[in-house]
Amino acid sequence: MLRALGGEDALDRLARLSGSDLTTLLLALTRRRASALSGPDVLRQYRSDRFVGPSSIPFGVLRAAEDRLLAALPPSFDVVGLAPVVPLGTCSAVAELDQNNVLSTTRGTEVAADATNSLALEAAVRRQSSADDVRLAAVQRVVRAQMFEGAGRFAHFTLFAAVSAGRDRGSLAFERQHFDEHIALLREACGDVEVRVTVLDPRFEVVRGSLPADPSRRTGYYKGLCYKVYLHGEEIGDGGFTDWTQRLLGNRKERLLISGVGVDRLASL
Image 1: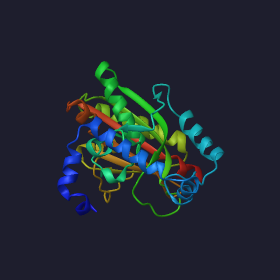
Image 2: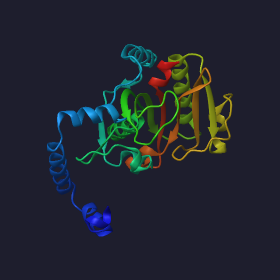
Image 3: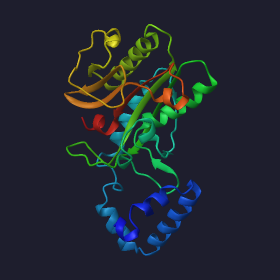
């Protein structure tokens, strides 16, 4: 296909366009493609496209699970109504995930793929204007472009996310305080869950405490310690420490803990 358009050079020239010029080009292209479609064409895609169909879980069941998660939040958390899109590169530049795993748009943005990424951006903005720890939470419908298999796995799903951001206080004081807060929140919200912890840095053993260890897990973007959350033997969420606010703010003293729960998975159990 690239050969027909002029090869790699054509792709390089497009990549070098300014953001506004590329947006203009893509808008013209999508307008032309959309004008060639009929009503039956749109309905045919709606029936077959995994990104656009409704959730298989009844709305009332999903809403009850969302309410349960939000009701468990301590007053110190600020619940944010997140936008459905984030800046282009939020997943690949910040969380170092493959850009092909997100749904990019024609206007220099991408459809939210992880509510913790969105909250990390907002936490970084708030940390710039406040010396206090920042605690944020949200419920957001997200889209993942990679193929999933198995029951309870969908191209779009709802995530409950909580993040805690602040500055290193020494002796892992920030990490211990906020890890305990997140684990207590997950237990309050989800019930009798099992939390399995993977220590990625031996210093974080003191943070893990008495929780069961899971030495087999390996992950790309967590630092120091991460964990998975199970209910009735099914994985419903995960979390851990990341360097996202360090990278966003250019400050190695910044600390960030994230937790996420798949609302669809929780609601289906």
